[in-house]
Image (cartoon, rainbow, N blue to C red; front, side, top):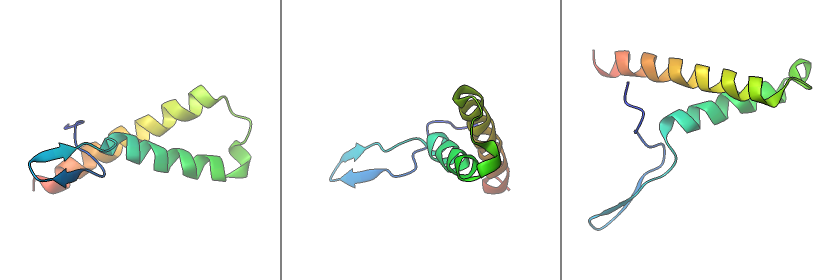
Length: 69
């Protein structure tokens, strides 16, 4: 699994300005969905962030399967 992929890289001439990792982007999206769901309010934040990164890792694995077909 490539975990150094960037979600929003930008290029300026020969330099690359690295954005957040794709893993962080996926985790942020998962966490946002969890937080927006009221039944999950009050859950320990470390559990929520752990879950978000598990989802992100799963998404990266599935993405790699699709990209490398």
